[in-house]
Length: 161
Image (cartoon, rainbow, N blue to C red; front, side):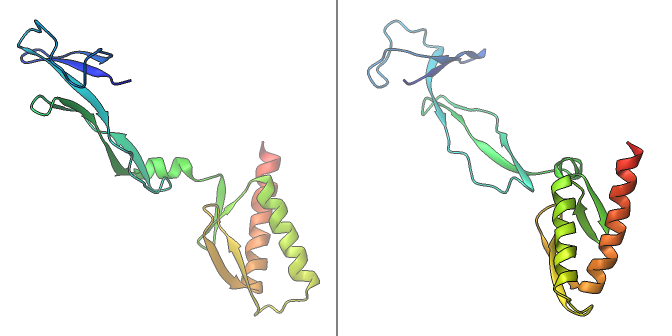
C-alpha cells in the first residue's frame, strides 16, 4: 500500500505515512492549494562493510515538483570509539590482538599441542587469526613465546575476577 506525506507550502510536513485512496496520483477534489501529497519512497540501502562503516538515514528529501518524499541512506565510516567497541576482549602481544574468549583459549591450547606433537621446528611457520579474523604468519618459536604471554595474561585475568 502506498503511503503519503502531507506537505504544506509554508509549514512543511504536517503528517507522514498516510494511506490515501487515490487513483495513481489523481488529485483530491477541493484540496487546499498550499497542500501537496508526496508519495513516500524509500531508496535501497547501499552495501557496506559493517566492520568499518555504518548506515545512516539521510534527511528526507521533500520534492513538491515530483511529488515525492524520498528516504535515502549514507554509508559513514565508524569512529575510532565505535571501532574499539566492536573489538572482542583481547590482549595484544607482538602486535597481534589475541581473542581471550574461552573458545579461543581452548583453540590455542589445541594448536600448541598439535605443534608440539608434530615436532615442528622452531623455524617452521604457523598461522594464527587475531580477534578480528585477520591471519598472521609467524615461526613456531614466536608462536610459543606469544602463547606463554597469552596464557599468563588469561591466567591473571581469571584469578583477578
